[in-house]
Length: 279
Image (cartoon, rainbow, N blue to C red):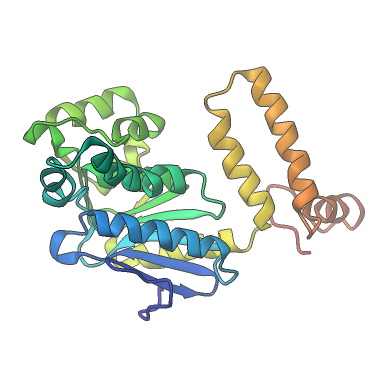
């Protein structure tokens, strides 16, 4: 279970607690269903930068305070309040959102889990999908509501959806704006699992501890490689993956590959697919 105390990485509208290698990041505007405004976006960039170098942190969990994951972008502060700004100033506000919601999270060097504890609307889809793993409360509410107030799912929401949902399901909810629950989200592949709300944190914690127990270099190479090869042709992907394999061996001070091979081939204590190296 996540601790209730903040640590020094907390920022305005973002709370952070670190416990047993897991950093729990909470978007913290419960009165606005954790809608993401420019202040939260700047805070998230600072938090992710800090946790990347924090040796106490092996895994990051992203969630929201209260009954919501995130209601998406703050319509007033992100849109109406920026309409009068010069284009370069307005683009700077938009860029700060993109910097953490997908540029930073998608290839973050540490494992990331989105814990969807409630409402997830519009722009809230992007950071959720950018995380490596997503676990949802079965009664969480999802909606791409943009169509109902005259805009499209921009901010790379549509691009993010296309990476995890089939086209029929994605287009249906983009075009109708209808709401669906966590069970449907799991059925569509939008999240990995939907579990009862009372076990959501326990299940997320269990997965986070599993990830924290893996070889950190190998885990990072595996996740980043998978995400990058999706847009490559087969020959390019083959060359890239071989290079990433060699890079991982060079960076891994724990010598995980050598230990695993020794335990499997020589010591006969490791069964690939049935356990993790004991070294």
